[in-house]
Image (tube, rainbow, N blue to C red; front, top):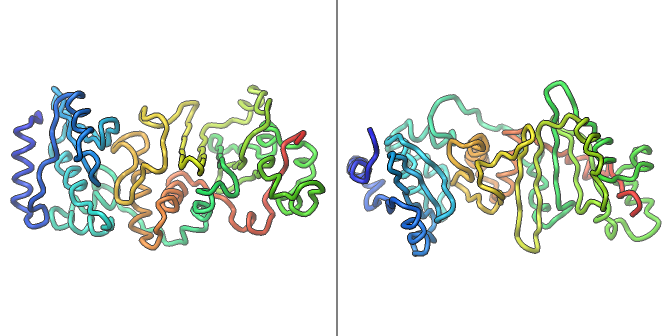
Length: 344
């Protein structure tokens, strides 16, 4: 059945009437039929409200959910799916928890509760609980990274199954000192033998590298001019996937980039900033290329209510969904491989 303003309004009213008081006084979000109307709505107070949602209805019956005039968060031609997504958005409350939303959706329809807990657009599959300390894999670094400590850029690289990206070769291509790489220099070595300025003053001229969780990691601030010049050598590393996390704390800019098979995975959203993620709200397009991360974020929220930082939750979701990790003990004990940039 093609969705129209009338069918959408009538279906929502039936849903509300069956589930008072949960949805009592919850009106259908504003429905517009053009980008111009959406832009006008975006200028009003509704777009600024927590959870503010507007529905852009296309001529073909596609319902597009928008938070603000430029951020589309879902698109569907399925009426039941549209009703679910509207209910999910309407049940979010300032200061409320994802578990409270899940419980409310359970009362409306157990399938909706399962769908919310799974984080996807259906309720298929069994979701296992985490069962481990979220601050041991990758999330342990999230808090410090927000202040650009220990490095501004956290980059991860993975090759095809059965292959490994060589960490030493990667560091050399980016400009690491060949002598220190060959000597197996560790972070504690830089801290102990630096004969000039203290290492903390030279940290902006250094990098750390290694392997964990099937990924090769390279952490740094700025790369020196001329680094990464040998493109053939870079291609020979066999990189198929890469994850980039970049922090600019002075400007409150924190970005995530995921590359796979030579292309950016982002549903054409452009720059993906971590500040878009709010607890209880999927950060990326529902059903889109990054929906696997939406699902992982939801599980992190439900499995670890003790985590109050959205950055820690997001980093844990990256670990669960992609396997990205950093060896906490190696960093704490100074055992992680490290080098200054050549010529610095």
